[in-house]
Image 1 (cartoon, rainbow, N blue to C red):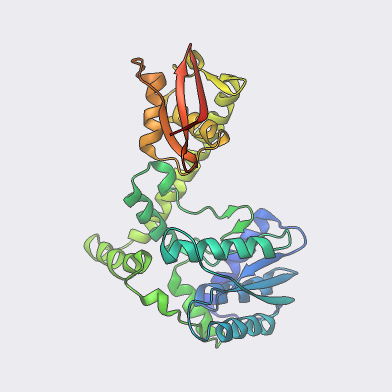
Image 2: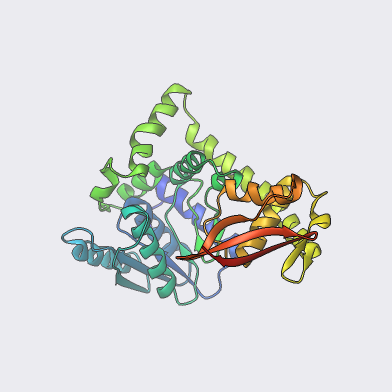
Length: 323
């Protein structure tokens, strides 16, 4: 463990990390995802001071000239701060959904592959949570999309969800650390950057402040409610099964908020991907508003093949059919 100054901001970060470790009791140690930015740098310093064994993973996205040097500096800082080990993992950023989504997918895949079975702590703050809730609201796909990020969704841990971004910056200043400023974090071409620099400040000004905290509290409340509904849905799914199918009469009296969760779980089991609210509602109408309609195509399958949910003889079935 590392000795750190008893300064207000770094103490606040340390207390958040200490509380997370006490709640979740990771065995054997933790990994910290370190980018070199203020959030992850403060998290790394606090975790090295609070946890008995800490390893840092630095993902080099290789999207900018000199990114390898930035990653090497971050790894060296992790060792200076007391991490037992610090590794740089270069990745290729490719895939659908734009640069933000592709970089995120590459980063999480690299962290998962390199974590060695240990939890990975991420530097997401209350500000990140507020941005996530706003993005979910824009998608309009129900409560699940605005539940935000959980403080622990194995293997991903987020000890700093209750702290503002300003706290991590002040913590770095107290430690004499200069965080890396990623140019992408100031590029208005990225949706999150515009939320951070334009939308949230406007909301804070128009509504008299406290918006980020209110959004984060809303996410927490929805997540707690959602966990209860998800548990009920799992229990209901077990009683509604008939082999691979579902018995309609067992689902018809179930409240719609639970029933749609049952259908979501079942469709994911059957191979569905990227389910939308519209698709779930259409499948639910095979139970709640049955008029003899045909099957409903949902996300899944492969080119030329669709996953279709249909009702026949009091049963719901889902299977792949050729276009």
